[in-house]
Length: 379
Image 1 (cartoon, rainbow, N blue to C red):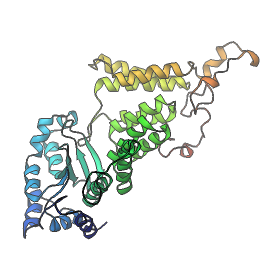
Image 2 (image 1 turned 120 degrees about the horizontal axis):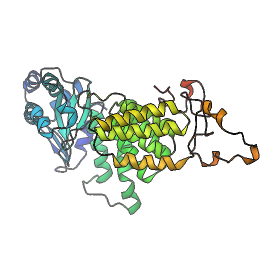
Image 3 (image 1 turned 180 degrees about the vertical axis):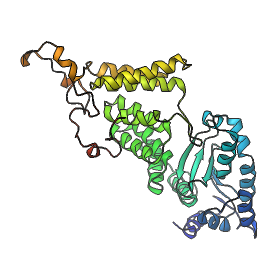
Image 4 (image 1 turned 60 degrees about the vertical axis):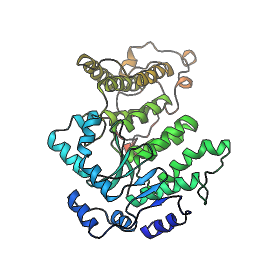
């Protein structure tokens, strides 16, 4: 949508319902870019030339004066928040990271929406945790999302809509679905929609949203949550893939949140059990060894959420052995063999498999898996 179309949507609201700033004063655009030290996206500058600031009943597009003030104080703000990912950056990396984020908007909770000039999109900076998550692919998409939410909650005269009980319960989902439609690469919207479905809808819908969030973000906590939910629903192969991504690189990249030592140790223990459940005993032993090493080197405590899933996984199916160990077992007549298949989660056809990558019943071609990105080989 063009800035002209956005201006038309804004002016359709009754006078006083929204606050629309005056056009950007002459020379302010150049002063803003000089202060930032980089060229700013054309759609953002075009919006400022029409409205130097917007107040959309909670969500605000900052005027240039506040943008400059917030930009100058961003490094100090991140120091104050003190999130783990920020604390692990060196001095030069902190300066570079802070200079790449330009606060352009704020939501009703006070969290900032920043232009990430290194990538070119808009990210959400959560002021309590310091988490940085993709929000929208552009500033105009961010404004469209805010206007969509307003139109769901208020009638054309600016009065709150009267919602029935069922409609009120689905309002959050509808807002998130519109957000994803406007900006499909929004990791935040896909993650929040996954969480909504995990509480109130079909597991497959939640998993699909987690896959989309993971496809557009390397944020380890997204993959960690995805892995826990998939494991809890018996999607062991998908769970292993997500947990491997969450644990693949413990070094911070920019302001990505890293998993704490206790969470990493518990996640490795869960991954070990997921390997054992399909007979991949060598990989299970390797993961268990990593978990033990983390706990020996200061990973005090456990992650209760991971441990709860681990306990359920252990109860879900009978222990398995690698195929190479089967020869040592006494042979049974077919009619004496227990029916283990009926006790296994969906997607696992047999309790015993080769000590390699593939789950039983899965295609041997790693590119022919059921899910995009979740059929790759284990590493």
